[in-house]
Image (cartoon, rainbow, N blue to C red; front, side, top):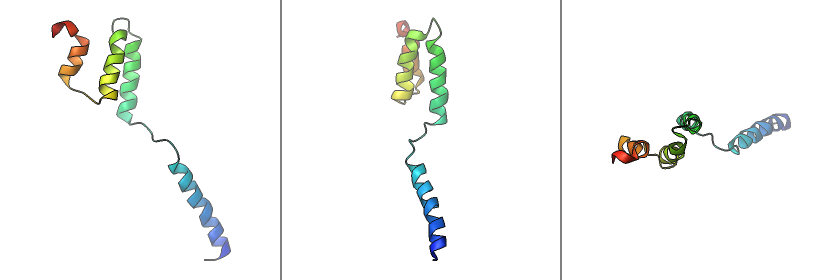
Length: 77
């Protein structure tokens, strides 16, 4: 490999390495659900439950209907 070719290859390798240093991007579903829970927090009736739902769904990864119902309707249990 000539010196000119080697010099051209090195910046490309450096760029690829720099791209891997970037923090991982959250999933699309996590972004959509996060925005949904943000909107819930601004709703007068649901703002106290939005944090619990966010923790359940995004934190614990639970999407079970019974768990969500328990947060939304605690008196029904």
